[in-house]
Image 1 (cartoon, rainbow, N blue to C red):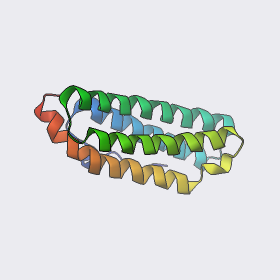
Image 2 (cartoon, one colour; image 1 turned 90 degrees about the vertical axis):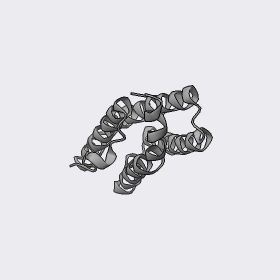
Image 3 (cartoon, rainbow, N blue to C red; image 1 turned 90 degrees about the horizontal axis):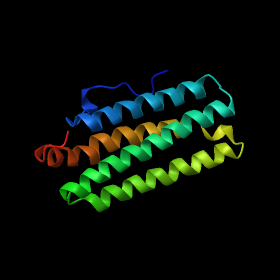
Image 4 (cartoon, rainbow, N blue to C red; image 1 turned 180 degrees about the vertical axis):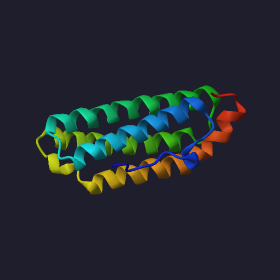
Length: 136
């Protein structure tokens, strides 16, 4: 089950970030597959944990670029990252506490919408700024 299909509308033209975004899309699709297949809690925890950890790595990469190049909207963008991280960690905690139903389609839909809207909205705003500064 593909929750998100990778396509050109998700590309920013910054190879390192586009690669991260492709990985996040794949990992979110893997999580959706695990939920759809009613996989064990241990599997769900592993897949969600991987997604959360990779998301943090990706956010750190973006934020490093912002700091290096003086991106003027850095603070606002970091707040968006913090809000999603907080939400994802809350879902992860609920799952670890034995609430496998927390990973329903509603949560997956939220994550999908957030990722797509974040890439096409907030991330698309910084892309020209970073491309002009040679970020790859």
